[in-house]
Image (cartoon, rainbow, N blue to C red; front, side, top):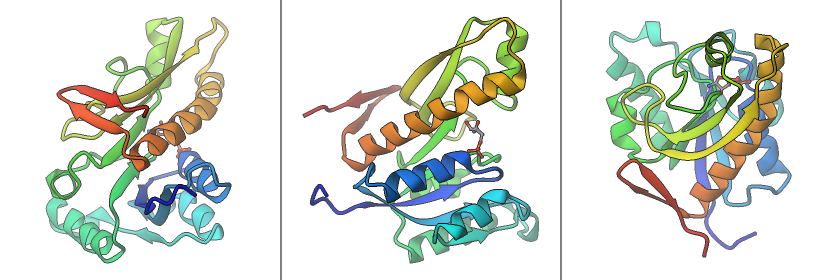
Length: 208
Ligand code: GRF
């Protein structure tokens, strides 16, 4: 324990949930002593992540976007639960939706995202397929702060991963995933220890 008050984190996910689980298990194993996951939010009823995190004892709540008249109202509904739970930061972990002005306004520089490429290369869907089709020899993962544009905010950490000629989307995805998990944990460690400072597009790490 660091003696610091742990950062109350919400995780947003839409699908499989390997990043969400990696974060949760890192906390449970003592690897992220300054992070306290308090809630998982999903926009997809069928997302396997909901059951996975519930089995680990984390509250998981479904918000169906279509049941709200606007995106703003959808986000306001989420925000009111986040406030109730005292959430201080959000980790997007395969949340397949652009975060809007309501949540970004409520959590300025407190929303992180993971993307399976070295941004600004290959933003958006199917980053692994895009990398293979382009023919790059190296790709990787990016954890960044979230702004209103897709896969765009200041970069916190990046790690590279080789691409081999025989790779398929599946083999490349499989090579990237453990690197995603580790990179996300390192970025959350930095955030929770108050070591990240944003200066324009740059994230400065304080190592003291
Ligand atoms: C990951 O590749 C992540 O980088 C991207 O969506 C995927 C989610 O995977 N944003 P998982 O649900 O965390 O397993």
